[in-house]
Length: 293
Image (tube, rainbow, N blue to C red; front, side, top):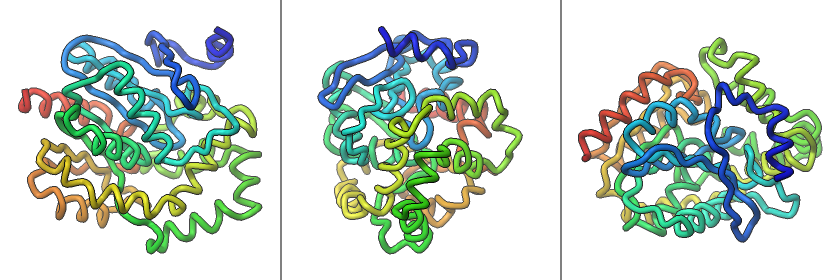
């Protein structure tokens, strides 16, 4: 497979030692990993990350569970078609197709960042397939009235924004790093694995398109929020980085108000909790899995 040959040039298999699997979806070819046996844990990433974000979770939790992590179309090791619109609602449609094609049931779905609306929307469409939810910093409501989101939206829809995203790979090179509270947790070796999936302008369209959807898909997010009652009675574990400059504690409070029975654990870290508080959050997920079994 030509894609695999290209991948081997930059993929550090000592960090990501999994069998690469591919599935043909209507949108294009999606990469995923499927490790271990038992109850399903399905990991959904945001931007500009990919399943690499969950590598340690897969390595650890696959000893007891079946750990599946996808790369959205346009991200990671999945195909990057120039004509895919890259909106979160399209990613959600792909995820639903993936879940149905490999017939996943009794799912513990793990979501983060844009993976929140993507994964939760798919879960809302298939509530009978979802057992419970693990959630890192994310949102699921309208964004068009959020001042910070408006600023980002103005920049990303400008000529300079397009230039920065497509020419210099702003999202993976700069914005990813800004999401870390403890910058030492993002070594050059790790950072390279987030930069290399986007080697040219065409491959970076997925980053630009999903960025434009922060406000561009505002009404769709709100629609999902209004349909969340289909999942509210599930068990929820919320793992939250309190030093996140964008998805702040205010977001967490909104989740707490809506999901009053959820288990909430806060961490002194930034947006990418999976990199800053890896061992601690793996342990919390394992505890959650054991209690709900």
